[in-house]
Image 1: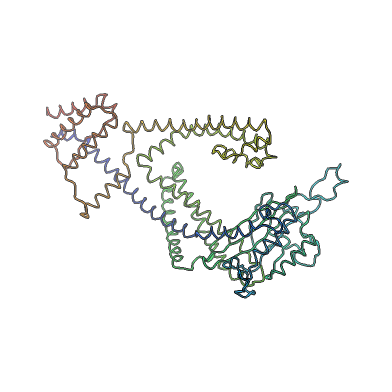
Image 2 (image 1 turned 180 degrees about the vertical axis):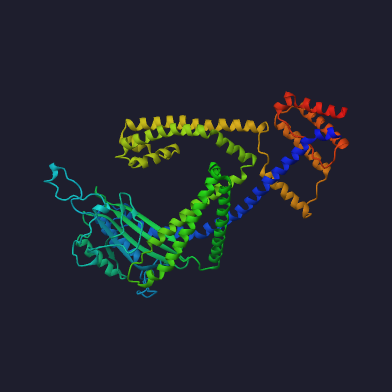
Length: 611
């Protein structure tokens, strides 16, 4: 009996392994449940910030100011302005008509004009619009000696060092005098420059006729000169129906090369955050988010204290740190935005004859939305940490971890060739093709070529010899050779991982199976499902064993021998051992089976029978 007990130590070891698995699985399931609640809470927050009406409000307002044609030329609108005369036509035409809605479509006045204009009859114009320009000083660029007799004035591209702050023109009104900004607004990043916050400011009137007369006066007295580098048109709207603010900025840049480059920004934001029951529910979710953030921070601190420098060896720990940093940044920005809105909103709306600068509030709200968007992206990525113990997910993660060195080596070769072609395209076609006008555009254009989005005729017209050679060789080397090498690396590594899994090298447990077993146990305890009999479980395990053996490549004779061996073990168990000791049978790999593992088990059986 003692010998039999010693022989059956494998069953005790298996019971220990099973207990160890339970120790690993239970915290994993608990962490997954807590993290799932956190993720749901975060999703509610993000979707609570976004209103479907934001898109429609931006669309309808942008269509009004960007697509409306100037008087006398149906083909010219704000998007296609190229000359100063066209710019003034836009100011005196579509801009003026779009800002001042003082009557209904049948010319019946529905409200007091002293209040404000209502664009599309639903969007109230907050305060009055503002027009601001920035200029550079004369002689800020160097003229070659041979041309100095022909050129007496030279205006360089815009920079803060070359900005002109002196009064000009009539000098009697504020629009002819330089003024600094009262708010700490971030600089505007345009197509050809980065622009400051001050400038020569024109504040429009609440009267349409007065504003029109002002535009005519500025045009006749040359308010826009050769020194002008950018003109901003800023105004803000509020729609009470959907509780949204729309902050609009129309930008006309005057590059040193001549002409005009237009751009625009339409920000629809919800500055009044807590006005309905759903908004208060969002506030409750924000409080829960802060609690989760504190709990996760404490957990990571304990983990770092326990693991020390080994903590940084796991990629998941880096992702968790990144999520925590993004969460703290989002909470800080949210507090800052709400504080600024609380302190500034009444002040901005106090005087309806002045321009209310909502731009800086909208800027920080958009910045907060972007941080939340990045946060929830990495929060979803973290889900892979909990499901990586699943067979399929484990195969994918093993594939990526095995081939990472090959991919890094391939990436070096890929980007050497890729950037060589990018510089070739920039230098060869940059002066004539917009897609290659900058090195950055050239890089993005090549990614578009790989996706099939490319205008071949443009580079062919730019250089009928170099263009086709560039295109054909790029497609051959990058698309047909390098990309297929990348796919071959992934495919080859995945085949190796799948082969390893087919011979038994797989995770100790699979989370999906564990969840399914826990779910079935709960149903049995609640008596919603009949408990399986021991004989049924035994038959089911036997069938699973046979199916698994067939999938792993064992032939029928080997399977029958293994089943016979298992029956011998069960007879010995009934004859010599307690029923509390767990069965020691463990599936073996095909190679181990053929190398004599069965012979070893038969020797143990014969020794026990002899005893």
